[in-house]
Image (tube, rainbow, N blue to C red; front, side, top):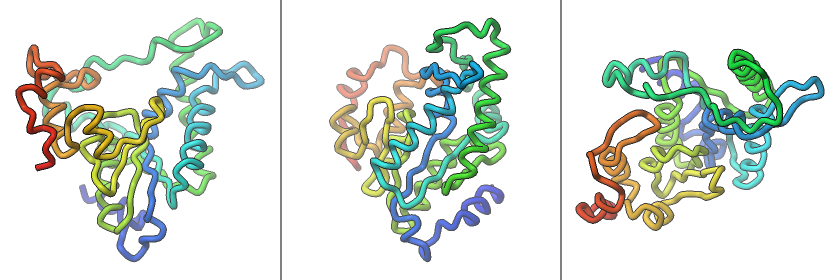
Length: 242
């Protein structure tokens, strides 16, 4: 925790720099890269797949032009970031597998080649973004979503607003007057009203809503037989901010 606090302090999230932190775009970077890697079949002149890098940069550029943030922070998962959660629940993310539904017009012949290409693209992407006027954060033993959530709170305390860029619905629990979530796939910006309209749940209660339903992507079971409509029918208070 000391390293985490030091990292954020070094990134100058304080009340003396409200202008710099007045509108911060916080990017769930690995989420963005993996989505681009699976979906975009672009090749370079040597025939190497570069869809992860190309898609990431194109999507990031579009979002920056759309929101015109005063600051951009790219947050990656740190090495061993899931270990702490697995100590609490050993089956956490146990169902995670490498992407298999890849949009490709060619055959790389082996899974090993795909893995090596993915690593090469990710390393190359980091080298690219290090040349841009953005902040980059990856802390060992810290998952990106924990760092993003904490960072958005710091932005709010400094008097600014933040846009969390991710397809992960878990971030909806962070939404308030100062925090919004942008989903690049649906091209929607989720504020309090949008979440209420879409899910019938207030962001203040979204963590309870997710706990009741479970989260298949993290291999966490919910209440057996409880779907979205059932939960809202029996617990209408989930739409209430208090």
